[in-house]
Image (tube, rainbow, N blue to C red; front, side, top):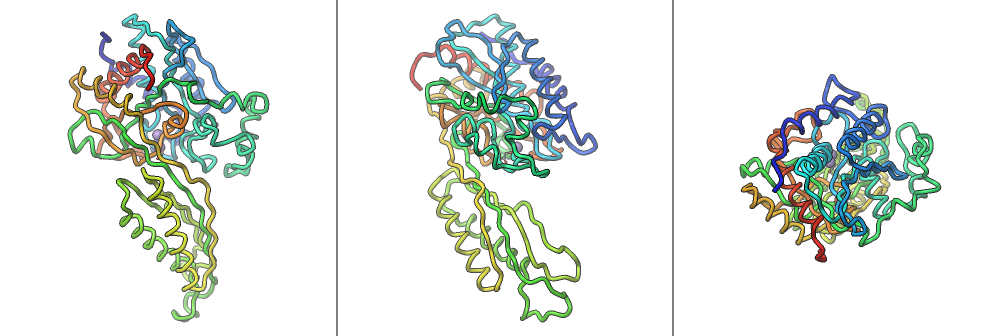
Length: 419
Ligand code: GLV
Ligand code: MN
Ligand code: MN
């Protein structure tokens, strides 16, 4: 029997990582391959070594810290999450999964338990799309969804490609990129712990959520071009206002998302650039992003076709032109039923209440689940808030999550049954 996870040790680790922060005046900002993120990588590798784990890193910077099993020829069990953040984030989105994974390893050491399969805590490179406009870079590469050539086609704000940045940092991209790829059978099972980023657990007063499906994002960049002109001198009946057209598009998108028959879906226009963005000028051009999520592929594709046709109709009616560019259209994941049952059993053993949930946010597990049986454990988010300095989960609740995670990992690492 494992002893209980320590809320103090989890707090120490969360606070240890929080020190690597580009915006200490407001929340936590740790963007891929910035000084803070690189320092956090070094810190986490050091913590992994202190736990006696074997640490390796692949050509895109995914970090693997392995607790050796007695039968290392068997496929390993994975846990882990990410350490990069959105701008002005909290200290839990991503880090909770890495810290609780490491806490599970600490418990294995403390209790002297052995297990057949290797268990690895994986830190996936850049789950957030903040730097290169594309999410889950490390796990996407593992799944074969982003080949080497594609790393040369995604740019950060300074115009540098992911490929160039990896080369600059000394990652062996040309020699070792294909080694990142994982195939079915390479990983026996993967379980990621994450904060819920919603308030359902809190409302139900439950400590644990077990994820049954993960919504996948589809992202678009839309450019609407009208006629820039004088705000006072252009009759209301004679304008081609790009922003007015975009407002109508937003309402059409909202209506489609609200009426979509999916079990869970969302649609958001999150980033807008209005030109010239001046009080007395009719906007001539608006560029904006669309983020669509759905746990069902078919309803998502229907919505995507519908929004494109609505947007084109609105543009034509208003005499503005439109271009729609698709960045990604990812497939949702249904989590592995057998792993879900093992997590349920672990909750019951620990007398922790749980419910099964759909995740609206995406996670690296979305891509890991393409090559390995996978599932996720959620812990409550205070007031459901995330991607905000107000993000919070009590350390005691993280410890309860770590207990369920540790027991689940151990069961999986000793199992020989097909999942
Ligand atoms: C991940 O942070 C997401 O946007 O779901
Ligand atoms: Mn996030
Ligand atoms: Mn996350």
